[in-house]
Amino acid sequence: MLDLRFVRENQEAVAEAMKSRHASWDAARFSQLDEARRAAIAQEEALQAERNTASKSIGAMMSAGKKDEAEEAKERVRAINEEIAAIGAEREMADNALRDILLNTPNMPADTTPVGDTEDDNPEVRRWGTPRDFAAEGFAMKPHWDLGPELGIIDFERAVKLAASRFILLGGLGARLERALINFMADTHGSRGYKEWWCPAMANTETLTGTGQLPKFEEDLFHTTEGLYLIPTAEVQLTNIHAGEVLEADQLPLKYCAFTPCFREEAGSAGRDTRGLIRVHQFDKVEMVKFAKPEESYDDLELMVADAENILQLLGLPYRVISLCTGDIGFSAAKTYDLEVWLPSYSGYKEISSCSNCGDFQARRANIKYRDPANFKGSRFAHTLNGSGLAVGRTMAAVIENYQQADGTIKVPEVLVPYLGGIEVITPE
Image 1 (tube, rainbow, N blue to C red):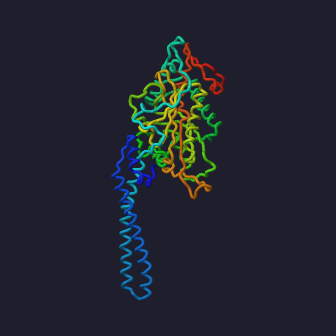
Image 2: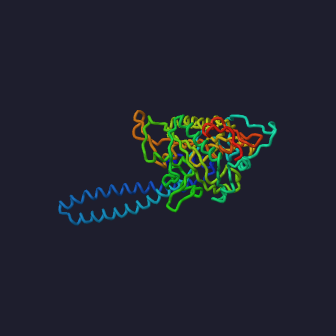
């Protein structure tokens, strides 16, 4: 979350940033609570000083035989304690209200984050690869939601029978292709210095608060009767591995990755991308997370984007990179790049990875610090970064559509052939 002192000293900048992010911000309410909190602290300190003086005088009065005066001093100490308790309760109320405001306030955009209102204002950074022209090849392209069932590798109808809409069932080479993509992604990131973790698929309230999903986005989460939540991304677990810890500067950047299933209510997406593998309640993803020094974190973001791009390039999938504007970046992010893969069924690009630098926003919530004795005393908050490397279901959709052949089969990308036991073409099952 944002630093209280920073907000106090930069209220105009905060108000402008929240406006550009379409986030509500009540500056008057913040100032009122902040002033009440500081006034209470000043009163508490003054009363504590008075109590200490009175307490010290009691012994001297008793020794001097001034029992009446000593009793008056004791009575004053008791009265002061009651005043301190009452003022402390007021301060605690102000503290909790301020914390609630800050927990629900998004991150400040980085200076390099473009200002804009919607996704239409996201500037394109670069493109890689050339989309296929199926018409020039003499056949009509099929979307993955048609081709997958025809090949017997995706079964949407039985998934609904087993669970509900927006769940998927993969069979045969569909299941193997999903597993192949997961292993390929995890192995590739491992070869580039990411330590792989195997994480719980459930998280507690503190963990989700640390990365920013709670309290603001509870409606997007599936939760259990025991107070746990199904994770929406492995970012939640990987980032909180070091919650409450102090890292060493010479360890940074720490680079982690993990495959997990991801669960999302998609409460605000009714009617969007309802067909196929694009927007579902459960999907697989390989996630990347970094812990970095503040002065290096934006260079580390560029390297993380390159790591995600590397997966798409090895798979031979055309994509583009865009920089998200202030009106489109996520709650915890200061700067975000999206990678969008070419999907012929949409005749356009669709998000397949989002890579963000959260600055010290999550680290402050989760209390993740680092020490660097050669450069400063004590400890400071680290910067956290996260990125999809990649969303597996969307990658499968892209592979099916971009590698389909005129006879209705799918050519397996070369890098995946070893993961499929040498199978080079997916044929009807």
